[in-house]
Amino acid sequence: MPRPSGATTPSIAIEAPASLRVVDPMIGGVDSTAPRLIDSVAVSVPAPRAARPLSELASLGGTSLLRELAATSPATVATLADRHPQTVRHLLASPPAPRLVESWWRNLDARAQGSLAASAPELVGNLDGVPFATRNDANRSVLRDTIRDLELSLVGETSRALATQSNERLEMLYSVADALGPSTANPQRQLITLDTEGAGKAAIVLGDLQTADYVSYLIPGMFISVGGNIVEWTDTAARLYDEQVSWLNLLADVGAEPETRSVATVAWIGYQTPHLLNVGSLDLAYEGRDAISDALIGLETLRRNDQPHVSLLAHSYGSTAAMLALTETEASVDALAMIGSPGSPVTTADELHVRGAVFVGEAAWDPISNSSFFGGDPGSSDFGAAAMSVRGGIDVVTNQVLVGSTGHNEYFSPGTEAMRNMALVGIDKAELVTDGTERDSGRTLALALN
Image (cartoon, rainbow, N blue to C red; front, side, top):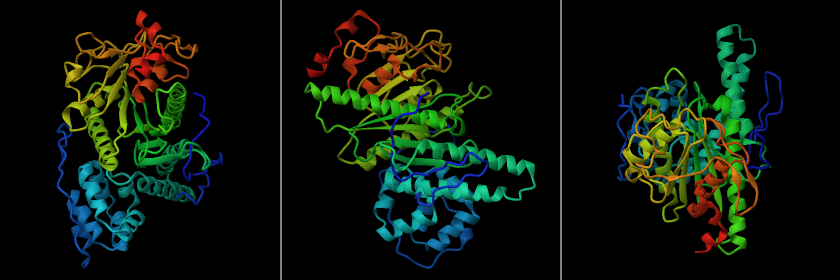
């Protein structure tokens, strides 16, 4: 896929093609199927006191651990993260509800916030409910330091197995750094999720989640990994961003939109996607359900009285995870677009927590669509979603030729009708989304003026 022209935020510059690359120092016991509900109780922060022994801290979890960390010296927190990394990882695997995290963080003074971000950046960077700018800074710090440590560990390494493992992690993290782009990139890019272990997790935002009027999350399906796909996935989010901005400018020119509208798109790989050996199970979809729910509720909590229009654009297995999040948790969105879906856990679109429209796109020769592997077919008339054309044609508004999508993996290709329609879903212009019928000839800008 072609690279987009833009993106920003202090970034990691990685230029060397050799095996070791230099990083810019300025960069800055739970049931997997049980949904996590939201508790609105505020988290109080205890007054500073003598630190607990590390062994006691390491045995805590959830909000109890967060409260203790807030009252513990930065040096002790750093030691805990270094000697007991499993404590942090267990907390992130089953984190407190985003509203509890937001309340906990808000009740810390600026010094305590800064100390925690510096001493436990992996934790702070991945807690939904912590401000996005803080998470970005923390995750960039983890990215920089982990790359440096892995590079140093390879010097004189004699174990082939350990060297191979370190190289694989390095390649994954180099990919994240490449996806973030240069420090001059525009729009700005923020790294709001980063898991450096195993297959990894990452979420890169183009734009500003704290202020954007329209927010679109790209939810991936099977075979999408951080190491193999974060660059392409971020490029897709960048194309979506550019297309949404172009549409908003066009709509503003005819008086259908205020000129001040802004967008943010999220290249989200926040769960481990399946491969051929485990795609038949919903286990990873439940993991995706919880991660999607936390991301959405975290955004809602941080935006308070300034809520954006939020859309999920979900592909393949990711559509099933998204539907689980929108039925089995308190998360909700304004719009949902699903492409190449393997099936729905609910009977109709009315059961989904979607305030606006639900769209379904199905390409010719896509073996996953209509398979109903995980439930009913979202593209069936009984489901009640709106059809979203992906077959290509001529855009009646711009007169541009739209490419058709074929098979399971061409929905996000440049210039497709699928990308055009998903961009419009994300900016709340459902009336302009084509459905492949004769009605499409009347989907002009006049509809947006009504």
